Length: 386
Image (tube, rainbow, N blue to C red; front, side):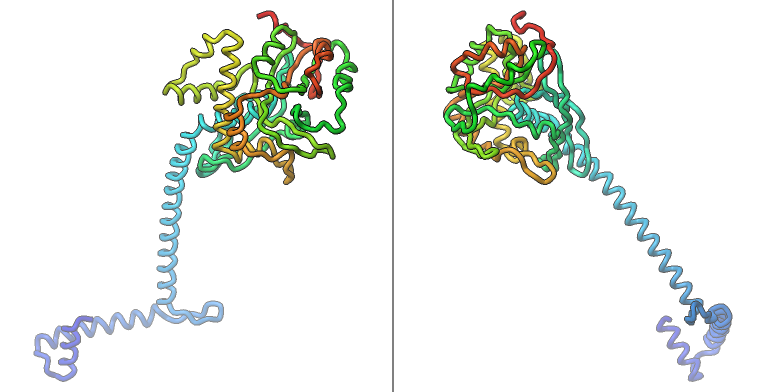
């Protein structure tokens, strides 16, 4: 109600309002009387669930419900649009680390898993700023590829979160022993006893421990003229004794494949060194010494990656199975620093070949221990044909 109308109403009641304005006021009051009658007829009280409710209350409640619904729909729409934008940003963000994730997984697999190869499974965007990488693990024995299972690693904001390793791989318990460590309960005379019991029509993957440290060149030269495939070289990373089944021993934790690192690893290493990927170094490096030098460089590059992502590397060497950590704890910073300072020394290797060829190593004085990891039927292409 305006101040003018209030003033005119007061003058009307006092009888001081001019005649013309008095007639206008009476017309307005007549309209108000009609409005009041309408409200009295329509806004009658009702009883709902034992509670007295007026029509005006019902109108106000209805208006509130409409306003609430409108606000809810607006909020939902904003959240949906915001989620779509976040999903797009998240997808783009995790996509930037695709090559780095591939190289990181390859570095861990090829460095900590003897004679295990990795093939691409899939890389999926599984949540905001989260991706899951899956790899298919295989072991090559002769011409046969043995499926080991699927390994998955989850990253968030490009940081390692969780690792799921195939149980069959995690529970493998073959080791390469350091020649400097104790060998309680291990008898050198029985090293080849298991191989002698295998039929001639079989081939095996064996872990061979040396009685002294050897250089990669010495190891490569020794196996060069034999019908045995040299698959993985263990590397001495400093003395650290562990207890296993009541025995004290020193075991190798890391090493490198003799044949080939992953393409992703070679790609990133080449890009870091030259600014662009090139495989010319591999194509024109035919000599055994040249390839061996490349493998050692790739191994140190892999260790540098694991040093910067030590949590992932530690989970590869000590995976979690059902809430129980198995294996041996380690520190990739210490491993890298020790090898970088002292060089690469080989305490043992992983090889595959026909059983009879492996038995020919029985009289070699520098072999102290042999452990069989896997056996298959003979399926062999001569490694000397090249």
